[in-house]
Length: 261
Figure (cartoon, rainbow, N blue to C red):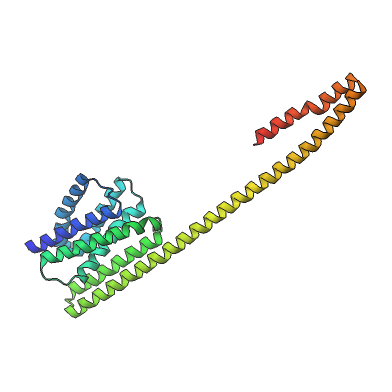
């Protein structure tokens, strides 16, 4: 019984640590200790009474804690589920009878996996298809485990679990890689499209500016030519009339153009 409690508490502590690593140390040391104590006490009690269904309490509590820390729903659910999957896989991969060395190996695998997943999660954030796949995989895992304990499957069947779990994890890993590559490609395409749209807008504005400058140059030459003619004639009345009708309105035209910009 003591060994069971020791292993259960160690696994829960490692799960909390893994989740904190994947969420980039969102929890303070005090919060990490508090969550670990709560899970160690209540999680172990529930595990002893309702066995694998205690998973719901563990995942639920971790999700609530992460949401309180203002983590996105995707990360608040995905990090605990991934930590749980890594722990399950490690349990079935490590074939060591000595409890101390088992926990040491489990800790190494879970911590290394958590650091690896920490760099992957931001690339797939808000991809709820991946989240649904993880939850489905977790349910399938625990269905196998529960069926094995319920019907007392022999050790040979248990060994097959390892292969099945490894296959599931590999499939998920490949899915992560493929979706990450697709997402990166889509981001590159969107960036190129944005840059192209900005270039087209810039080109259009430059063409419009060039056309406006040509028009202004043409009008400016005509105005100067007209002014020169009226000055040569010495007709002040015509000169004043031309100024009011042609030159003065240009001020309003320039002000309107500046307002549009």
